[in-house]
Length: 302
View 1 (cartoon, rainbow, N blue to C red):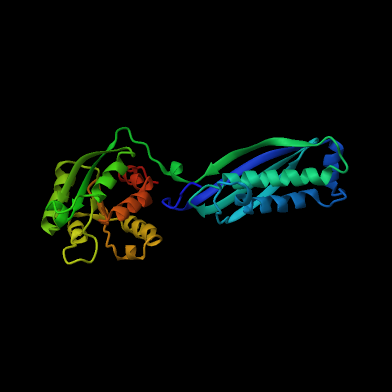
View 2 (cartoon, helix red, strand yellow):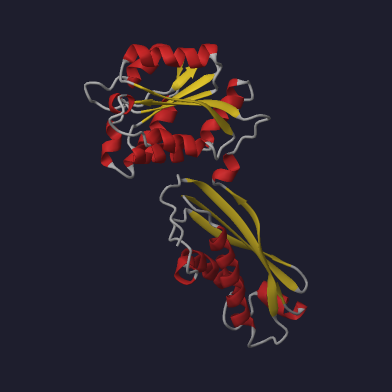
């Protein structure tokens, strides 16, 4: 199976269709509910719902996901019955296979119920016709890459006692986004130095995105939140909440991280924890949605 533990949850939706082919006489029997085995459409609907719920039992690489809704409906024509299945789930993976399984389950049961009275039966044209949710739905395009800076806040890294890992993780992550990292630096845990560097990057160098790593805990030298509060003009609590919420699902200590995020002019400042895993998971929780900040600041709205 694919490891999806790093993904964040979004509302997923999918719709699939399939077609059952039969003689007009057989379709009339379905319409009139006179098939000996029972109401074909009601059984097919129940079978489709059950197939969606049990999709992972026979789709080897599918994940067991919590379906919030699944339903089927039918359109009867002269010599065919169209089957439609829809599903929603708030989860890390999509529900495409679930709706395809639902359509397939419904069609197979329709065939089983009609074969005693009709020989000319077939079905097919099973396909996905719509899906929503996931990262691809939340990506913004930019005419030119955003300009970014990565600041590592650490006394030991600044002194050369230990090598930086979290900043490099952030830098490598940004390289996969429509972002150019133009500045990378390591600062000691000194509030005045941090604030001064943030102001310089935002006001003088017109950096779009500044991401700091480190200094967000309760240690006696952790002052990054205080430094950021000094320079931002508008706080963005939702960004910090997303980081902590995503981290808290993986490590209970994540709730102890004191992220402060916000904007100064048209520069977005985001603070991350200093651990390598904390930085990586924080970036996973924020992208690509974080980049929607910039068209919003330009007046583009949601």
